[in-house]
Length: 126
Image (spheres, rainbow, N blue to C red):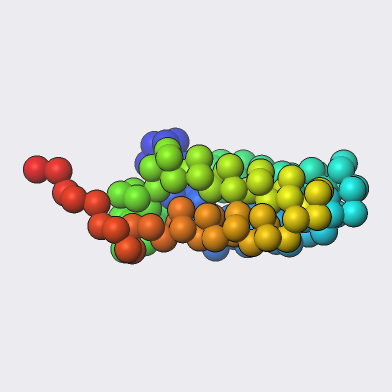
């Protein structure tokens, strides 16, 4: 498996998802209370460490061959990844400025970026 494939498929590994979601849950309250250093560390360090370990030691063949892997390959495009990242940054800024509605909107964008292929099927290229 190539590095590009590992980078793609590690995104839906349960350990990576747990690291990302856990980091969000811990870091946003810290940012809300203006603990910038701890907020940034707890937001980015778990995701970075999980990714580094998984890309080094992980085997994602079972994900690649599963329906969720095929979905990811087809629908997790660069624009979808950018939408996820931009929404994540917006949630961090919103926490800092005490804007819960922006945090909620960011969460909606993240979920939409993950699931848009379930609603709008991309046409196959022949």
